[in-house]
Length: 129
Image (cartoon, rainbow, N blue to C red):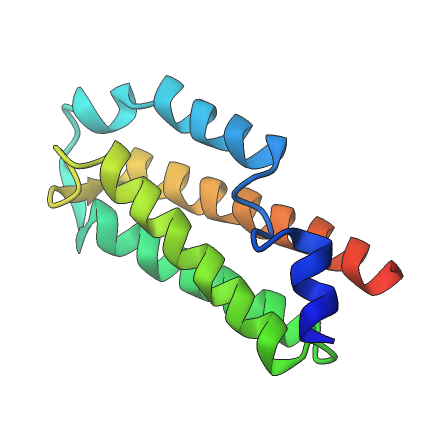
C-alpha cells in the first residue's frame, strides 16, 4: 500500500499541485496584512506559532476524519505539512516572530482551512483509486 501511495502521489501529496501554488500566491498577495499592520497584537503567539498551531489542528482533523489511512500515508501527510511550514517560514521570514493581530489570526485560520481542503481532496482521490 505504501508503494501505491508514493506511486499515486509521486512523493508529494499537495505541495506539487496547482491548488497549493494558488494558495502560496494568495498568501503573497496578502502579505500586506502581515507587513503593514498597524493593529494591536491580540495574541501572545507569533505569526509563525499561529500558523503551526492552526495547521496542526487541521491535520489532526484530516487524520481523524480518515481513520483508514495507513501509517505510511499519515507520515506522508506529516512530511507534506513540514514542507508547507518550511515554505511559510521562507515567505514570512521578516515577520514570523511578530505577535499576531486579529486580522492576521483570521487570515491564518482561513489559510489553514484551505490547506486542509487540499489534503481532503487528495485523500478522497486516493481512497477512490
